[in-house]
Length: 442
Image (cartoon, rainbow, N blue to C red; front, top):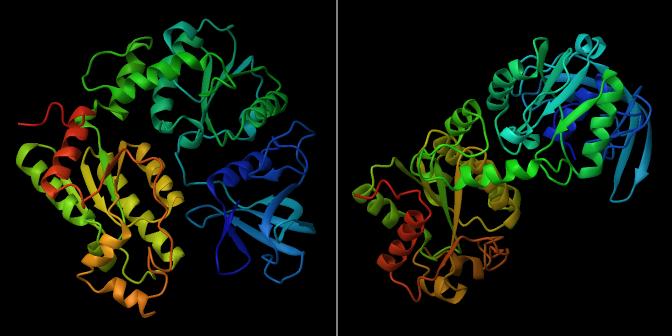
């Protein structure tokens, strides 16, 4: 569902909805497709329906125009609202026509699918949304071939579009002498929708579509890729990957090197006073003494005073604080760093967001410092629990706001039964056993 800006009659589109807007403008999606929703085969689009909160047309009435913008607030299209259809949950489906404003400049880049490509005469269209294994390489039938690469990691099993474009360029000579490569705003969502989207593209392009999808539920040939992906994720050495061509192997390892050189984010989550920061600092000190890896520490209180200064302590502020920590940690991991972060991170959904963010560039380890509330409150050297009990701090985690204990923690440590040195050893052992330190510990 799109998120909205607070200034003017405009909507800042999320990634899936943004892709659908572009496909609708290209006439790929059917009439009355709900942007960002399931995909069904139907007649080519002449208008579009987008799900928006009630009254966000700027005037409070289901009429007028809505400007649809990307994450950089660049206007992509205007929705000329024709009518509003009430829906459950206090939202309206606004039915209207899309008018193109300008071509998208944000995103993965590369040559994009456009009107000229849609009108060309293709013999075959191949959607390359994952690497190909050696047992599924061409020959395909010769002729004019269009290779489409999704322009979002959401549709490429997390692989950057640039990496798949590189693979496509190496694959092109195997396909034929007349190959055109384009990126396309394809967003996968469920097997039925994904199959329907392939059928819609085939109808719009007037050529058969060979969809190489990352999920075996859509493309049974993807089983081989799942095996390769598992081997790539767990690799601790530069041994060649089985079942992929050399050019694919090299591209994948540049993106996802062996674990001792791969970026990794270790997030310590727990109540205030649980010992998160103390443990994170101890792990940092041990790593600086025993490992040659680059180590960064993002402590919750320090981040609050700098990166997240000005944010409140309500749920919205807390979630945004964790997203900012996740963003910075991801950028460090992107360049091979090891990041330790120690926020409370009370909500499962936000922790999951950070995990997904990090997994695009490296690995994520969640450590639950599970010290019980009564112990944390007894420590209370900052006086926070006392202030919360007295009502001076609102929405305090563990008192007046929930802490959602993780059910996906990679490690659980309780500082009431484990000293800091013991807990540190447990974390280091996990990192070494997992391969992130296997070639680095001195």
